[in-house]
Image (cartoon, rainbow, N blue to C red; front, side, top):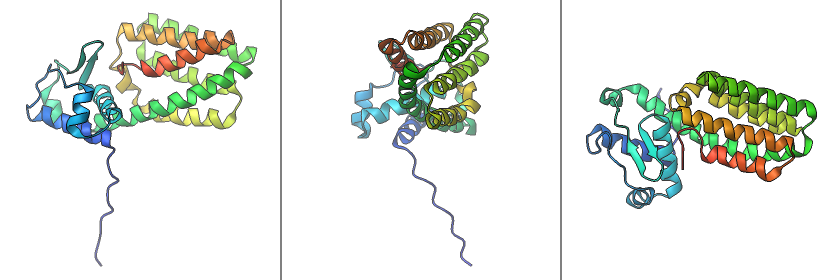
Length: 234
């Protein structure tokens, strides 16, 4: 009997772009520490949209290959270990980074929805729980316990979803967070003290906005959170 292998699912365009750039680094066409072309230049050269390029760069950044310098551009990390580029784990990190980036985009849309509901439906007990988690987050940041801090941020988003009072949205938020949780280490390694402080301020603004029933404050904090996600500064 003829045995046929199943076709592999087509790769996302953003992952293809990321792998092309990774291959150029492997071949020495792009040196460690080198500045990458702009998003517009990469978009035109590869005949893809700038959104695809941005997602590819985010995946490379999440995988620890690229660093984004605000106001300057994207650079291949200076401290890049060339031995890592030929190992299987870097491809795994890149694929995982791409998945996290897509999950972040989905979480952004959902968190806007559940925050709007929380602004309308949050009860005193919900507010108390949010602020309790925020207080624990402050302690974790002060103690430089980043992994614990990240776990608390995930817990915070579940609490906000629960406060919205829609069980379907709460379940969806929980499912997306469960996709991220096994890969928190990938986010953790991109953290700095400044990122931790900024992340805390943003989450506190979400909680304070909901407590005050201040929709512009809470929703602006949600947008800021996902537009300035750790090591995915835009």
